[in-house]
Amino acid sequence: MKILVVNSGSSSIKYCLFDMTDQSLLAKGLVERIGIKGSCINHFPTGKDATKRVMAIPDHRKGIELVIDALLNSKSGVIDDISKITAVGHRVVHGGEKYSGSVLLNDDVINTLNEFIELAPLHNPPNILGIKVCQELLPDTPQVGVFDTAFHQSIPKEAFLYGLPYSYYEQYRIRRYGFHGTSHQYVAQRAAEILGKDIKELKIITCHIGNGSSITAVKEGKSVDTSLGFGTISGIIMGTRCGDVDPAIIPYLMEKENLSFKEINDILYRKSGFIGLSEGISSDMRDLEEQVQAGNIKAKRTLDVLFYGLKKYIGAYTAAMNGLDVLVFTAGIGENDPRLRKEVCQSLDFFGINIDDSKNDGLRGKEAIISTENSRVTVLVIPTYEELMIARDTVEICNNLK
Ligand code: ADP
Image 1: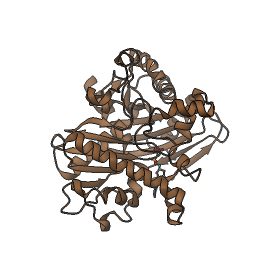
Image 2: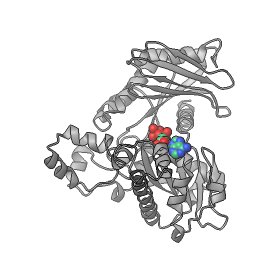
Image 3: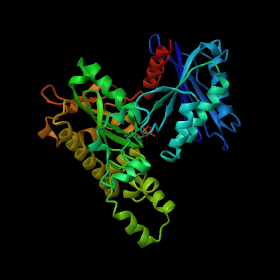
């Protein structure tokens, strides 16, 4: 069974082709700069030379056509016929309250996804576009939607409701949704697998720390709370997003600076977090770490805020679950930044978290247990693999069709 996984963004399409008989990756790639100058496709077939084609890619249809060409190509290809693709799994950011798991995409589902555009105006439209193009180009192939929000639909009401008039929840579905669900679910499951334990017996905190970040409490295999909420902005500070702020600041700042809704939105989503706190040094963790080493106090204060925020969430979610067995770090920063893991974990010994420097130092992008033998909480680094999770879900949905 070969599964094509598609993550269609506004100007890019990421793709992977898996052979699900052994879950191996046959090829992956990226179509970039769709509709703008310098568009190209980078294709990486496993065991063969990578290829790059620079050409005009005016729209997503052309982009997906090029993906199919690359997969079938006599030199760089990995399948000889399009019919070898059993199904396509699509990453969809927002599934609202309707989808707590992956679904076969049909017209009804797509109509519902259209309704969720107002909840995820930047993400759902290109996701839907990718689905429509794949339906057109592969009309006989089942298409499956895997939602970033689905894993968090198990969050109980006391954790997903905000303290606003209840009618806003009823009328506009204003509540905590949470994102990165596929990643949190993957690393939580993988942690249980690595430890040889039943996930239903574990209390896990998963820290997905990348450009966008979220922390999730996973109890008995289910998400019970998560730091992103209605939008993709709350929780710890991120590359350009502010994380938790007192809502009173927003009208205050709008009045002081005479800001429009668009302008305040821009400040909260694009000018805050690492880039804002560091006064423009960078939104990229590597640059900030480099500046900290060089003694830059702006970079240091930014990362101090990040580390403190992470500790607070780990403490809060330990309380929410009344305990903690496993702590997982994942995504670009979580997987690759030993100093962050050390700074966050070193003053959490009260919770039974002790990491072993010899296991943590220098560890980048690899699965490993980094806690000491005696640590009550097992701390792991697990590279996220959302694409594989999407492929697995797609197989499951297809098997249920039979
Ligand atoms: P996205 O949310 O866009 O998927 P990623 O998960 O790829 O983001 O994470 C990007 C972040 O990971 C960037 O801030 C980058 O600096 C950081 N990162 C990547 N490699 C390292 C590294 N070796 N050390 C510290 N941070 C790193």
